[in-house]
Image (cartoon, rainbow, N blue to C red; front, side):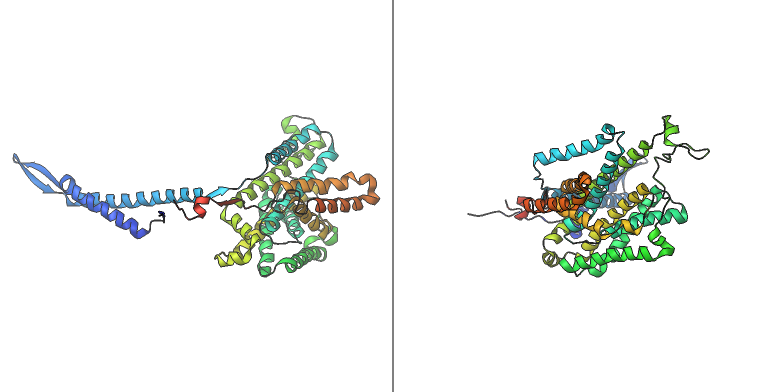
Length: 433
């Protein structure tokens, strides 16, 4: 019994050159009588004249055209092969998908149903902030497998970047947002580079120390951060330049005057809710797309086995730094929104408790699961709120609930360690037929 093995490889430039040269030779043979020679009437007699210049152009165009055509076809074939070599892994149960869409629908409709309930919308806004932070930390912890206990530092960098840019240069929310994200990403690289060789507990200790260093600097560097007094009067974001104010400055319009509606403080609350909802959804789309790109696959491979990644020739340094930078950038974006929403920030807003809460959201939701982060954020934010009437026992209830969930679902509410994409069976077996 015999088997035929079809091995396909990309065409090399030398092979393309050889193929184009063969086509040019055929063009030369055909072109000599058709292009290179012509007859002209000279005194009533036909004479043959040569057109070697035109023949040379014809042969050259044939050569170049064939070479380019073959290169383009090889590129298209290579892309098709790359797409067919991998397949999406989507083993999410239908019920989970339905829950996800239901949560999204409820999030969009919530301000409509509770348009006069400020407490409800404020609480939902807080949940969305933690969802965005959880998705950012999920890149580092859930996908790349790097334990980070100092994530709140990037949250603080984003918030203080916006506050300082406004205080010193008068920058608005939208102007400061990308700069703050870039600044947080820079801090992520600064943190990630010295700790590339650390793993597990050692990595957790160093990142914990980094978070505390940032907080201590903010407390003691009073010339920069105003110390424990914090920075106030941070402006809220506007809707295309329309502020949510009762009395706008002379010559300008507010949201209420522009749309001809009666001023209400709820307009700003609802706008902030939808703003963080959009930012969170963009974060989800961004992270979901990254998971399907080579960098996302590299994160998942690094999480499973770093030694195997090195053996395969992967640049582990760049993979780790990219995870730290992107996770930090998303935390910085959330920090900018937090500063704009509160209007005041101080170092006390960025303590280790925040880092622990965000990490708990990622672990409780199931490391790597986007929907799990949403459910865990709902649990961890709403549980303390529901226990306000039992303030003496609120933390006890919170801890008991956490222990029960860990006993019931030790890998998280929606554990997801499956690779985002994997090789097709035929591709994995080397294309045997």
